[in-house]
Each structure stands twice: as structure tokens, then as C-alpha cells.
Amino acid sequence: MFRYALLLAPSANRVYADAAGRLARAELEVFAGSGVLDAAPVDAAVERIGGVEYLTFAAPGLGGRDLAYLANLSAAYALFERVGDDLLRPVPLHPLARYDSDLITIPKYAGKTNEQFTRLLLNVTLLASASAGGMLDRQLVVLDPLCGRGTTLNQALMYGYDGIGVEHDGKDVDAYGAFLRTWLRRKRLKHTAETVPVRRDRKLIARRFEAVLAPSRDDHRAGATQRVTVLHTDTTRAREVLRPRCADVIVTDAPYGVAHGSRTEQGLSRSPLDLLTAAVPVWRELLRPGGALGLSWNTQVAPRAAAEAVLARAGLRVVDGPGWGDLAHRVDQAIDRDVLVAVASAENG
Image (cartoon, rainbow, N blue to C red; front, side, top):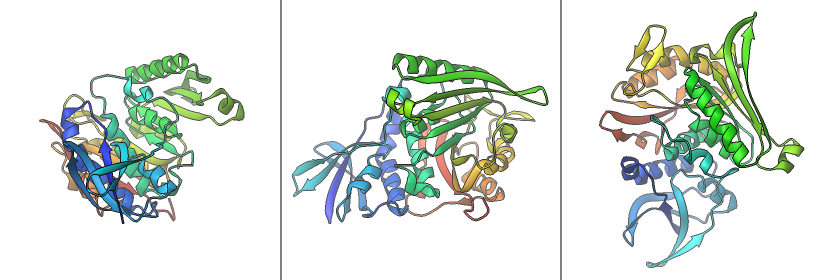
């Protein structure tokens, strides 16, 4: 057995940083139980080495593909092999990163979901899905049906995937489009970007922002492009503007009921349960067979059992096992955030 120590990345959010070690351990356990690793880590623990917090674990030697997966742990900063009791030998990590990190870090706005947590939520959802084995080398499709200003979509682009977002607030859609256009021009990346109306029977049912981009001109010329699409419409009407089975995974952060409530036909509600009850059956139709839905929400306004029941009624199987029950954490005094991931049947979709 080899022993390893993972240095955790700093977080600008102090409250999240306090939970980062525990969340990293839970995420590592999800990786270990997913079946994608040849040498699954064991004995994960949070330790202080030289006064600095590390996630330590043991494994029977990590090969190149295992390291490629673990490089994408949301809190990974640097990995070391432990030599004896005193020495740390650096182990190179090469995470999925098609673009510069400022694609994710530049946008700043009230209500933005923590970038590390967004990556964690995407990771565990991917690992629960039938696409887990293609996480490193397939161009998957990630859907965020409550996408806000696109943090999840930008993380999908970083991984080399396509992104689809649905957002009720037109100002957020416009802000995301303006940011992405500016960022692409500043980076001098070849791309196309446009906003067009979506009509059915001559009636306007949505607006669609769509960008096609690539990390280099050579990639763009070769057709190795990525597509990000954001639809300005209500998420409960997403099937009117999206094809069924269009997404490998759905990843979303439900409104917390503090600064932002959940909009339904009945109006604005602090609890996301009414929204989820109406929307999850629609989202379920957008998942491919074996796809997974990853959801985070504020447990102070909706208990976990109630959220699980909504997913189960839509025909989704909630995932459990090592690590899955340890992803809850405090955001602030009004928000305790938890994570649920549920999987669609691989047989009938």
C-alpha cells in the first residue's frame, strides 16, 4: 500500500473552507465507490501535516488513469506520496481544464454558488451516472435547469463538455451572454454567439442564447467545438424547447428561500418543494437512460426526506453508500446545504 496526502485548495469562502476537508473526504469516498478507479483509495482522513490540512489516504499504487480522475477532485490543489514519516514526494496532477480558470472565477454576483461546490456537485453526479467511465474523454452534455448566471455551465465547458441551461430571469440570461461574449473576445478564442427568439405556431415561447467555441483555432477548424445554450423560459416548460433525453446529467442548485425563492404558478415560495414537484418530472424526460440528477438545496426550508420523495415519485433512484450521506454543510446562519443524486433507469430511460 502507498500512502498519499492531498493538499486542499484554499477557498475564498471561510465557512466553506471550514467544511472543505470533510467534504473532500466524502467526495473521495464517492470516487472510490464509483468503479472508475483501478486502485480505490482507503482509510481517508483529514490530517494536519506541518500545520496545514491535508486529505490523506492509502491505495495500492495509483496509475495514470486513476490520477487523471483524482486530479478533478473539487478541492485538489497538489498531491504527494508520503515517504516515511517526514517526506512528501510530489505526484503530478493534470485536471480537466480546457480553458483558463478565470472563466469560472471572474463572475461575481449576489447568490453565486461557490465554485468548488459546483465542481463537487458535478463530479458526484457524473460518478453516479452511466457516463462515469467517460468523464475524462467523452463530450458529455450537462443540463442546469435553474442555471442563473451559468456557474455550472462554465464548469461543464472547463471539462470539455456541452452545456444547456434554463433560466426564468431574463436579466440573468442576458448577463451570462454578455459575460461569455466578452470573455471569449478577450481570450481571442474563435467562436460564434447569438441570441434568437424561439417560436412555436408563430408564438414566442422562449429566447435562446447559444455560443459555439473551441480552445484553439485548430480545434475550431477541425470541428472539435463545444456548445453552450441558455434558454430564457420557465423550467417547468423546458420540454417545449428541448428534446427528450438530451442530457447525460442534470446538475442544479435549487433556490435557498432566503435571497431567492422558488417560482411556481402559485407565486413565490421559500420552500423549493413545490418547484421540484412540478419540475422534476419534466427534467426526468430530459435525462438519457442511465443519466443522473444532482440536486443541492437548503434543508432549513425543505427536509431531506421530502426532497428524496419528490425524486422517487419521478421514477429516479436516490444513490446512497459511503460518502453520499456526508455532503451536507453550512453555508450561513440561514442556509444548511445538502446534496441528493438520483439515477434514471438504464433500461427504459
